[in-house]
Image 1 (cartoon, helix red, strand yellow):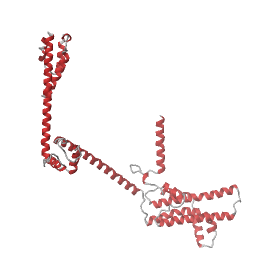
Image 2: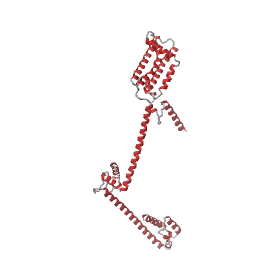
Image 3: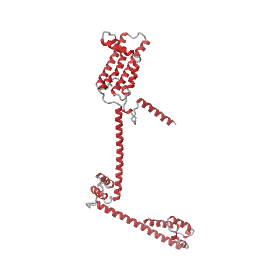
Image 4: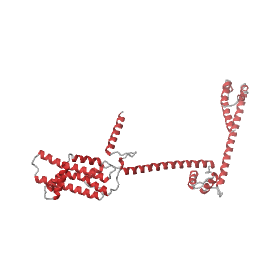
Length: 388
C-alpha cells in the first residue's frame, strides 16, 4: 500500500514537470514522449487518455495542474499518516515489551530484570556477564538501568546478543589458536633442548670432559724440559718422558687430535661440559703455538741473543701457567662446573658454543657461521634487487 502511494506521488511529480504553468509552452508537448515516461513508472497508459483533450485550452490545463497538485498533497499526507501509524505500532510494541521486562513496574529495567526477561523470552539461560554487556551497550545514561527511551525492543536485543555470541566465539577461536601455537612452540623448544644436550653432566660426563686437556698438556711438555724432563732420577719425570715420546712417535698425532676434538665438539648430543672442554682444549693448544713461534723468530733473526737462563725461565713460566690452567679446568669439570673463567680463551669458546637460537623454525640445527653466511647471501640478494 505504501509502495503504491509513493509510486503515485512520483508519477504526479513527473506529470507536473511536463505541465508548465504557461499553456503556450505546454502546447508543444509531444504526447507520445509523455506517455513513454509514464510507462517507466509502471502506470497504465489508459490513465492519460483524457490528457490529450485537456491540452486544448490553457484554462483546462491550469485546472488539471491544480487538481494533480491536490492529489499529490493528499497522497503525501496519506503516506505520512501510514508512517506515523507504523511508528506508533512499533512504539506500542516496545512499550509492551518494556512492561514485560519491568517486573516491579518502577519504570526502569534493572540488570536482573533484563537477564530474567531475556531468559524467559528466548527460553535459554543467559550469563550475568552477557546481560551486563547488553546493558552497557544500550544504557546511554550510564546509570545501570534501562529507561523507556533506552529500550530498543526484543528483536534488537536478540541481534545484539547474537553478535556478542559471534564475537565471543571468534575470540575463543583466536585464543585456542594462540594456545595451540604456544604449545607447539614449547614442544619444539623441548625437542631442541633434548637435541642440544645442555643438561646437568653425569659423573661419566665429568670424567670424559677432562680427557681433552691431555691434548694441550702433551703439547705443552716441550716447555717442561728444564723443569721435568731433565731430571731422569725422578720416577714421575721418567713416566712423563715415556708418555711424551710415545705421543710424538705417532705420525701427525697433534693434527689428528686437533681435528678429532674439533669434529666431536660439534656433536650437540654430547653433554655441554664435554663439548665445552673440547673447544677450550683446542684453544689452549693454539695458545701454546705462539710463544714457540715468537722464540723461533727471535732465534732466527738474532741468533744467540736470548740468554739460556731467560729461555729456561720462560719455558718454566709457560709450563706452570699451563699446569695451573689445566688444573683449574679439571677440578672445575669434576665438580660439574663449566670452567669458563680463563681470560680471553673462555669467552672465545662461549661464542662458539651452540645455543637454542641456532635452530630454525622447523627445528633444524644451523651453526652460527652458517647463519652468518646465509644472512650475508640474503643481504646481497636484497642489495642487488634494490640496484635493479
